[in-house]
Length: 493
Image 1 (cartoon, rainbow, N blue to C red):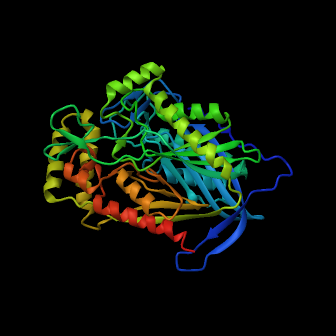
Image 2: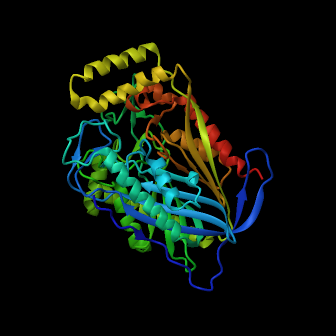
Image 3: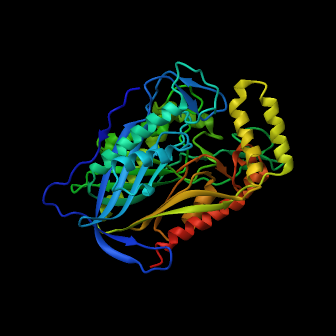
């Protein structure tokens, strides 16, 4: 397989300019005093393709799809932040956004290991990887689908390629870091739609029909905020941006070609506006019950697309471009050169959603039925999650995953590994002491399972039943509480 070249995206400051001073907040989780020091903020960015140059199986559906064409390349976009006091590194954050459905198995740990081997001075615990949740990106798990033995890149081989590409981009970004300023802004755009329809009998259905008499409404809320984090050189030329949208990138999820979904068109418009050097990280906010698919008003929206001469992907990108520009046009008047920075790495400890004997028996019966046809491999694995959890819960009932919280000036950045229902994201934002809070889902190892609300579980359907959800509403509330506690501790000086 060919290794693709990496694009350098950092522009150095002109000589003689004063470096950006920030204050770095360091804290210890035992009640120790806060140490606040002036520091220099260095920023690095890079991007690379993570699209293989041969046919590949696609993840995100129950049936097997082999992509032989590339409609738009999947990429990894890297942002490196480091605060320094002279020659001493005080704090780091390495953030990687990938056009993938989730971050599977040992992908993040593989990337960390390869970065550590090349950059031993870097604390790779401060590196995290998130997925944009495009359903037209390569499969990363062996045995998830039944694949041809030849003519298709195998998942293990793809993961090796992925780790090599991403670690190379991280090294490039680290080695290219330069002093920079930072701004944050808030825009709005209608991209996400709650995808759970509720009916007269109080049942719910993901992508349920809304044009029948029994339809009573949409189950949950939507979050149309577009959170924008931008980094600028001495001439206020943008180096990199992170754009947080509470919506997965799955508008074209059913296709059989590699496609980065709406992030490809969005990056194109942003680079047209701000320059081709711009690195754009796509962050998916809390959006477990959201998608860009329309639940109603389809005829009106389709008519507007025709009148504008745009595809649906181009329309979503247009909205995001406008929202980002509106946020930056105001926020660039407040580019900070004196901000606090601290990065916490902690462990979520959540109660699992316990499987009953009846649920275990039903799942096993479904596995036995599906086993008659090898094409059902993906659905069998889905049901097997229930029977596996039934055995595992006998030895413990905690679901533990790493999460990150970063304070950068007045903003907070927090991660989680789930397809987290939007209600939980709204809770985190509302209870956070930060002026603006960026929530990034689908981050870290073995990400991608849903975390539903109480009302979703009551309504049922695909994204709110045991095969889809190792953690239930009790765990969702625990996640909110633990995340808010971590964020707010950074404002309790």
